[in-house]
Length: 164
Image 1: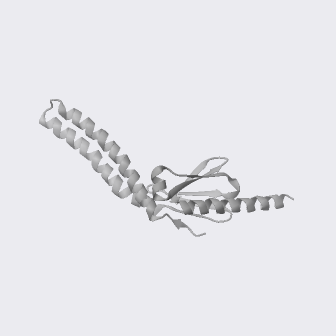
Image 2 (image 1 turned 90 degrees about the vertical axis):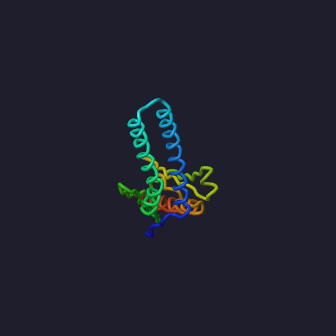
Image 3 (image 1 turned 180 degrees about the vertical axis):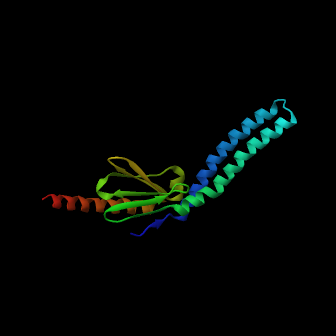
């Protein structure tokens, strides 16, 4: 089975999403720091407050710059007539195998930013759980859903013939 890498647009989307998340946290952190510094505090306490607020900001900066790239490099997916395989994870590596015969529903989802970038997510539902195949191009997502639907129909027919 050929494992597919994600499109480069996905990396841009993940960077953008990480930047929005980090920006919201930095705004909250800056507000709290400003409120603390507006009160009358000693120079030593002011230095501690600034250091304590700078460390999380630097960690967020590393998160924005490094994590999406590592996640992108670690992510691959593929499918054939009998299964879907997804490999992902930066710190904890995971390999998910979904048998086609257990698929109950397939969903393609898009948010506004994903639509602008031509990206979609695919959710594969089985009796036991749901699994999201991370952001794909809309064309890839449609091809994946169509192929899985065809493979599922073939697999159901095979299982019916085995019962007879």
